[in-house]
Image (cartoon, rainbow, N blue to C red; front, side):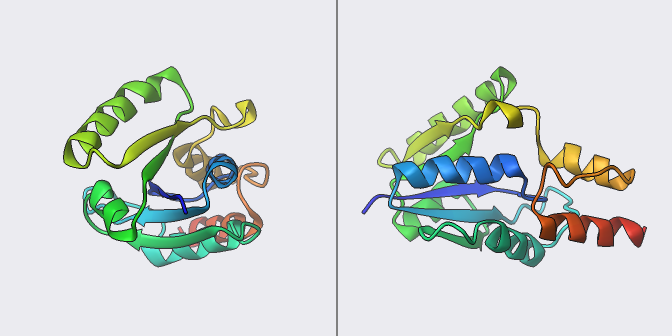
Length: 160
């Protein structure tokens, strides 16, 4: 059974992330979507909220689980028995960073591959920062995120 992880901040999860998961589920037996705990980044949503939104947004996929981790991605992959790490690649500008990370992860664990997947063209411009900024200024995010995420964004920004 081929198992991979798809790590990220997912602050919040977007339809672009979900599209990457869909593609990964077609290629692998099990996909573990893992929310990163990164103390160097300030997130709008807590880890628990991001896990909840991912579980809701990914409930249609029977071979997907959601968890969180603290530490090196490659160590988490090793701990869960994954053969690979899925990364989304939207544009050429993403490539250099992802290439460097893939080489470092290979150095740390040469038996774990990095798999770069491109989302559908309609999501190539989409990222969590754009969605957060749109929501902050009362823009309609319904075409970019699942309903629960939309509601949580409305809740967060109505309190500010």
